[in-house]
Image (cartoon, rainbow, N blue to C red):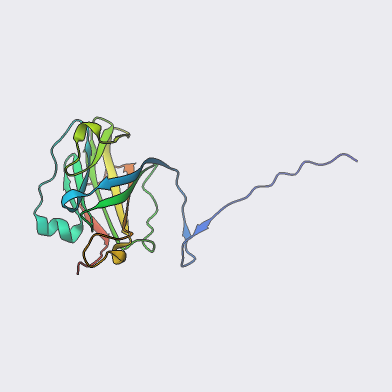
Length: 182
């Protein structure tokens, strides 16, 4: 008797902690490493536009992000070397808040198709260059480990994850989850 081929179709559904289905999207890691967040700041900007945001410091601390037409500055919890991960997503990623303490989302333009990622006082010519799709980019900055910062602010397990995607939404800042400063 001949074997009858069987086709098996498997439909995977991912669930969050509350058993709600979430969509899985493809992402690619563009950078994973450590950056010195001098003055509590790291930036991501279009390679052809060196201008950085100059929002008032109180607003930046509350939102933990400053935005200009071609760049963002992220306000970190420590004035030290911090772990940073940058991912490119094929579309706006599903919103996951449970794993993070502060989440903020905005958009900026990258007409060159190349981003520069650096600490505020890093030597720009040697900073990592990240290839992206040219145009308006959505960015979600998710911060975790903010509750692990030592009293003196020197030690901690804080982490900073940036998810980028091609987006056309307006350049407004949305705080999706807020971590209160002490």
